[in-house]
Image (cartoon, rainbow, N blue to C red):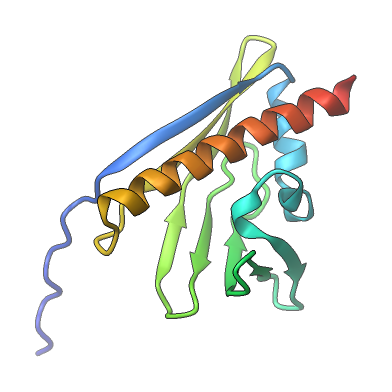
Length: 143
């Protein structure tokens, strides 16, 4: 009989968000198309769709990651997984939630066991800048 998998403790995480003064449906409509992501998600670099539904992102440092996005849905869920060159799979929860006539975009950033404090802080700052870029991109789109 195979040995039971050892329990995995919860990872530390941070929920990072931005308020966008656009209807949640419009924000979700923009985000559900991964082709729009390079306009705001600097961390992904360029994105190219493969025939199997996966996306290939070539990052600024030349590394290549595979990204799989959640199928379009009615709940504002935009979760995606990123597989790094060494095979590490990172789950990234992302949500669009209505807030009055606007929207909240909330990303959960997990601290992976291999991250030191500096990497954790750098990733958090990178996500914050990406979310601000998303807000600015959508605000400018409506003007």
